[in-house]
Length: 168
Image 1 (tube, one colour):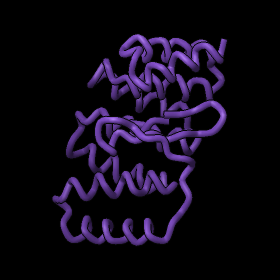
Image 2 (image 1 turned 180 degrees about the horizontal axis):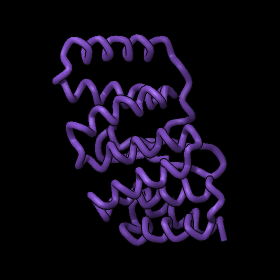
Image 3 (image 1 turned 180 degrees about the vertical axis):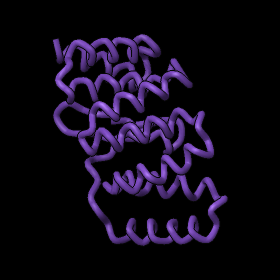
Image 4 (image 1 turned 90 degrees about the vertical axis):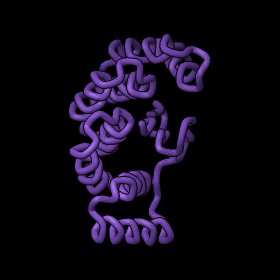
């Protein structure tokens, strides 16, 4: 899934919008003591300064990246109460639901990001992945086609085209 959020058919791949403009692929998360220390520090920062929205979002991303999806969902929802129009964060929230195999919730959350930003390519791509995982190949192809058509020369556009070809 692309966080702002990318799924892959063989193995879940998470791509993160929160790493700036270009997404990076990351293998399935595993817990790392250094990351746990970072999470604990960010939790302390957020606890001591609840108005630090950047720290709250960073905490949600760290929890998501390290497989603490339920905790990440809580933090993303907290952040979205303050910044409800952030389509990237909404997609990240949808990725968490996907990782928990709550495909219907993932679909509804990611679709809500498209109401804010109808041309969010990662959202279109991820909806293809979620639908594929939910057993709806035709809907998956429809979303991948939209993702490809938004920008065929981008990494996401080319990945969407590849999935369309391999899932015929």
